[in-house]
Image (cartoon, rainbow, N blue to C red; front, side, top):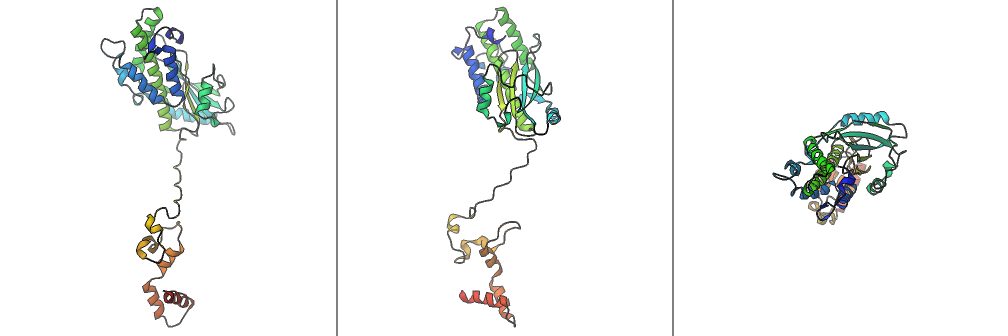
Length: 318
């Protein structure tokens, strides 16, 4: 079933098919794939189970049940295609229509640089607008194409949709079967989108880059970014260095307000030097070095020295 065949008089949740499909695609483009999946599951309640067009598994399968393989090779291929000053900045994965008998799609991977489109500087709204054009500006501008990635776990469900799609094409499908074909196909596309997004977040990428999930033939033909360049963590990125705490941020308010020297209990950390590499305040140093014992030791010395005079003066001022 293609988009034209699906856009007849069938309604989903009270709205025409084309409006329903556009609403789901808009959620994907806005980064709301999980919300799109929930909305589709709400519709599947009425279409899955015994005596209904779709098996119950449609309702219960989730993105974590879908496997994306080939990620290590994807990372290698990015490195092979990178050029000084012209790195790969976007990956496109197209869901391509497979044999009519099985309905199982295959997946084409495309690699892009900023020469095709400014992916590295584009946010999600920019990508959404570009995907909404009749044909994306980067179409036909890939550095390379291949079958690097594969998605598994949905084969039996693709076969179900393919079988119902044949009924729709022949004009023999009931309204309920047409509705099941539309919602089921959208659900499989969203699950694939989620699985690819989750794989990118788990496996990482060599640098921030866009990740696009599209379609090459077949219904529903969604085109949307799974990740914008700023949304995905680079592969093996070092952990962010902790920011330096603001001065006195670790003290309770009543201790921070206390005047050092008035009360040793009000500022207990002043009695201890911090670990190496941290700032040592003058008060901390003075309280660490000037103790009753150290003063007594100085008093016992027979020959006055500069330290005797200084610390003795401190003692007298107290």
